[in-house]
Length: 94
Image 1 (cartoon, rainbow, N blue to C red):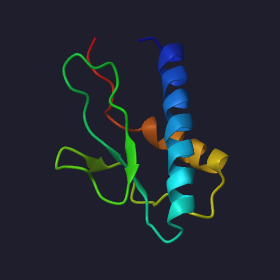
Image 2 (image 1 turned 120 degrees about the vertical axis):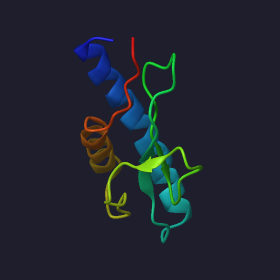
Image 3 (image 1 turned 90 degrees about the horizontal axis):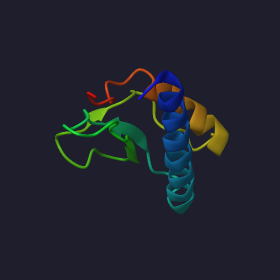
């Protein structure tokens, strides 16, 4: 995966996560959602982070100590996710 493809993938993934987060946050205004990630498994090009109150299992680690704020717009959340994803070890080996 080259740099342009990686940027495009990160933007697409951030869009998807931000949209899902917004729907979940609207359902529960008082939930504290965080971004979680896991390392890419063999054969994966990229490991897709998730938003959740708690990690789904021990494989996932906290991507940022900052919560996804209910005061954010979808676009603000997307930018935060993109910036955070760029710092994570989520790319697989090619």
